[in-house]
Amino acid sequence: MLLSVLGILFPVFAMLALGAWLRHTGFLSEAFAAGLNKLVFYGALPCLLVDSISRSDPTAGSGRASLALALGTVGIAVVAWILAVPMGVSRASRPSFCQSVFRSNNAYVGLPVMALAFAGRDFYAEGMALAMLTLAPCLLLYNGMAVVVLTRPDESAPPLRRLGRVLLGILRNPLILACLSGLALLALRLRLGVSPADWAASPNPLLKTIRLFGTMATPGSLVALGATLTPDRLRASIADAHKAALLKLVVCPLLGVAVCAALGLPPLHRFIVLCYLACPSAVASYVMAEAMGGDARLAGSAVALTTVYSALSLAAVLLLALPA
Image (cartoon, rainbow, N blue to C red; front, top):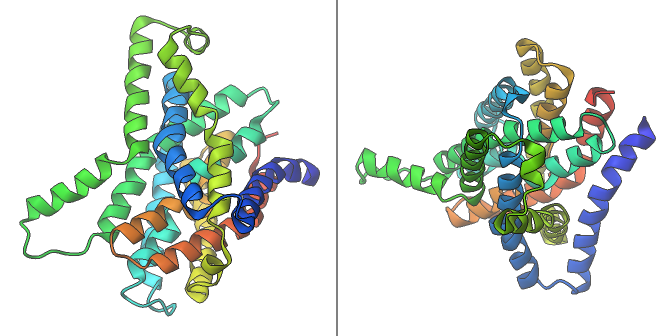
């Protein structure tokens, strides 16, 4: 079993290491790495989500899994917000600290890990469809919570205007737009009575282009993420980043175990939820902290450290929760 886990995680972290090495040697410049990250975030990942959701099986029963993921996310956000200052995090850095703890890198790390974990198993198609449908509504939650946490109070603006800014920030997210587009195509497919297999084999050039672009999401995202793992980010705000890593990779999955048990999730659903909760902090947490005036140094350091340490948290989930 241990060799099987290593076989699943090795390609993921090898691609991360490749990205870090290419950035270190200068083969990937900082500008190119940033451009690759944007290409994946605004292009390849949305295409992967649109394609996967549109040909998924809506009867997979993802509702309870999404609820468990949402409850785990909200729960760890509350814990992080309450414990931040007692743990020594400054009040100014608390919003970025909290976001680094609750916002998981599910698209860049979670989905590739599950794709490798399910490969060659009878439930591969079911598992990936369930993983996509579980994540789709939670993307709205992640981005909504991040905007709310990081938005600085503007008492001079009317409440409706402040609410409008939050909603606009959520709706501009390309992954949310991709999920909504995928759900619209899924509804169209069901209305036309097209099976998932026939939809996947469709000769429609637009669908084929979306599917082809989506294939670069996994390797592209991992290389782009690896390129962010610079020594400067690993060292910056290292004490607070370790505190975030403790909550993100230890407390968060344990909270997920309790939530899954309370909801009585079956093994496959439980594994998907725990795999998502054991993922490192999302790269988007650094991007949003920088864009919205948060503590970008802490956010960047948390992304780097949790990505390295997530090899242990993900290995634990694979060893203890992966269905046979």
